[in-house]
Length: 183
Image (cartoon, rainbow, N blue to C red; front, side, top):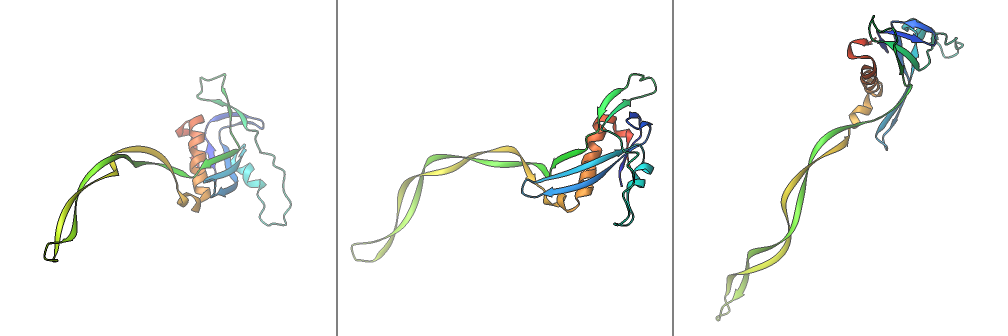
């Protein structure tokens, strides 16, 4: 699995219209609530596939199609200058979602309450009386909505899926939505 950049690029390995990016490592840090991952960029998917081994004891092959992170991106046919773009190979992504949380606001106020109590009349019989008591209490007077970052542990259940979603968004910022294809 990987992402293809369907755009005209000049790379350290020559020109391509289908640079292939895949995630190589993925690390979850639950304490810091983040996902770290590294990527490699290849001249095309075929070159990337050649580098993978089938068996653990197979020798590593030459990474001949591996591309440096700096490329020149041509937005369209009329763009003869191109734009230098860095395709990063290390990402650190928080595993959080932004939520709105209502926070109560309290003030100390004097509250008057009617409190029942038991007393005795002149014959010694119990009677219920009510007295007025003033007490200072903390009372909620308002709420304030605040944006907070909630740790989403479910994102950590599928780290590669989450990492590819983030990688796709980052590449779309640089090359455009229509240029990034999942393969």
